[in-house]
Image (cartoon, helix red, strand yellow):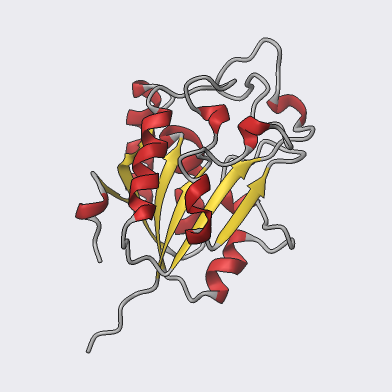
Length: 198
């Protein structure tokens, strides 16, 4: 019998702050949150489920009153606020989340690999301790934090798949560039959960 590769679902920044009604909304963010909630509610077969959250205290120039929406942004994901918590679609399924990572207290931190859990353990350390070899990523936004998390995952030696239907981009233009960058780095992009390579 062939041993199955241990796989983690990595849910990137699915928080009200990045959904319609939040301070830095992505079109389709709430729908992405609902779809991920539906996935978690069923027998998904992942060995580990990890969420990441922007959790900004004072991220310096990352916040700007006149943002360029490339390197500087309006205030968002402020630590301790309701919109920095996990999206309400995920809250009832908290028991299915193995680890929660928070990132960006004093820096921009686009990648989930820049964060730590409540005990100070990094995402890479958590995945390594669980013998995870494959990561499937979903969340917000496709062309920023999902992209950077996936790229870091490949750099660290993981097989990485982005579940594109469980993401949404800031813009279609940046999403097109992001997809090319991801594919060039060796990240696999699947349309949805049912297409993932097991």
